[in-house]
Length: 330
Image 1 (cartoon, rainbow, N blue to C red):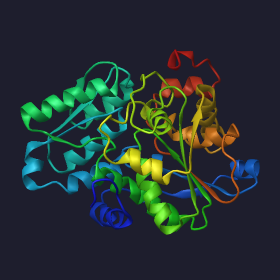
Image 2 (cartoon, rainbow, N blue to C red):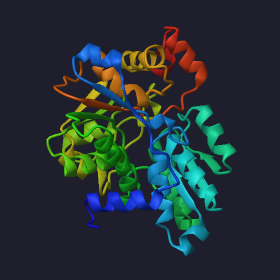
Image 3 (cartoon, rainbow, N blue to C red):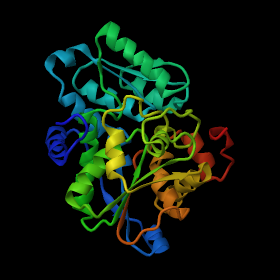
């Protein structure tokens, strides 16, 4: 594997490595969205994954690829919640120690889910960058193995298995809308899709508040952004100024990046619940939000990745009831 990319062969190898450890999630037609845009719209129900989010694919692949010595030392990562939960789950299955470092912006429901899996938790600072500093210290002082949430070849290859499933389930997909944060999911899915169908448009969807990958792509290099509260909390955090893989892959493989307001994300959450009977978190609803807001124009079969469901249910109730969401956008 080269230093700067993950290719189809690595994604196929990841699929074999994690077989039996993850769910092959359904891809279903949304009649309401299909009628709205005039083309078939498919929902990839990745929020039905075992830990409630796509992250289990990458975490399972990365842990499976560790040596016996590395497994004995344990793993550590910074996380906005879903990667930490996935890593904790995969490590528990292997009888390994897991340490998850998170900022104060991570919702309490995600912290509780990680604790229940037996992982150790460190709450550090107000950003992913602050949490990453603690990760670096633990690697240096305690010898833990770092498995980052996105900028790692085995993580990207694991997430890319989702792209393989999409091409099998919707082989005529003209567009695929992918939640975009640090780029592990987008890079992996795009690598799989573009290898099989170069003309399929892969569009990254993120929030307007603190979209680090979008800012970096606009600048032509990785840049830091202020991490802000958002309904799409799983998409928060930077991409790392020393980013080795996902920045270059997203720059090369994504056809567009679209940013949503908090109201547009909330509309996606509401639609998922009211029309699709699905509970999704903000990050998982951005594809729906983008279509509802007319931010993406589609010209054929379209797939939206519903990437996670790990939303605080009190917040979800307020959103679907139409209450103000200012507390997440302050």
